[in-house]
Length: 105
Image (cartoon, rainbow, N blue to C red; front, side, top):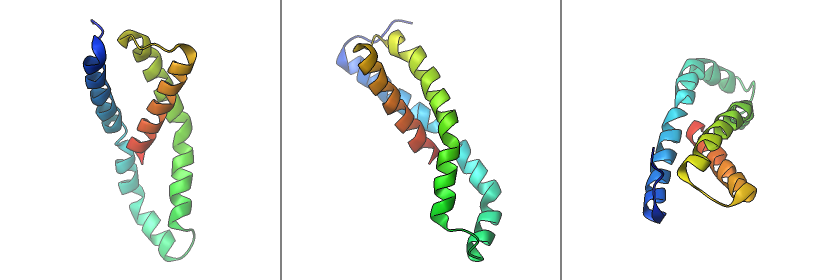
């Protein structure tokens, strides 16, 4: 694979990678559909609040998102030819984590 040259090639790759990463995280929708009946029943009886459910589901997904983001970044950061050393990689990793987390929620 030839790395994209110039800013336009990298921005195009970035747009495709962000959309792809959001679509790979759509499994959360299927999980919610499976849990919907339990969620509606337990919130109707005030067993817990909606915000508690959302926070717990968000925190549960963090370890998997970190592994997914780290593997994605380790493969793509140098393959694309991005620079910036460790601080550039860390920014790229945090942006990927945020993108994957937004895709899940």
